[in-house]
Length: 253
Image (cartoon, rainbow, N blue to C red):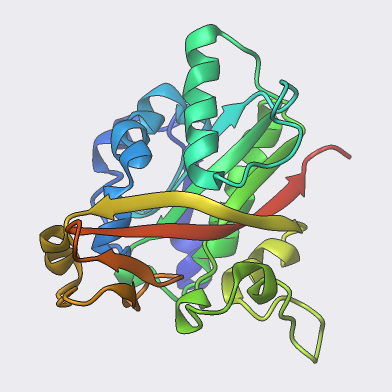
């Protein structure tokens, strides 16, 4: 038995008592990511409204990972293709469909977060598999994901449309580790989501979030950002528009 065999993954619908503990993780998200206004308004409601689409990994009594996804109806007008506004758009679609009582046809992954002490234990593919299975059990056609490639921050000036096409010579799989996990799990890379989330703030806020000066106009490379942040000193504003990559996991036989 390996240490990973001790980890159990359930949905929050199956383990509702864990809802209060899913944020008890030492995560590696950059601080500015949490300042996306759509996420700030809606992400915290996802476990309560969509527990059957949220998965949680436990090792004994300890929560070691969480994964959120949301269902939405992909057959409506304007939803025929995955949106350029990626993460923000599917989150708003899901809550709009919930409010209007629309039946879902697909689910979109939003995040997989693994506790810092549990990184490197092979949890990412297991959590992704659990999210796929959760969506399949709800009778949905697919799990889609606006993927945040884990190594893109190392090439912030390379367009995402070019980055997502990079593959390894030895096996033709994506060069990016997180995209590679998705493809190995059966996912298909569809397109870039050019404006998946947007973070805008004053220069003082960006200095607080990043510990960088933000004292010159133009593009600022920020650690963990996938593209540069645009700084406008005249208007005391800096904006970050993050691209992601749409990946589709078919769930039908």
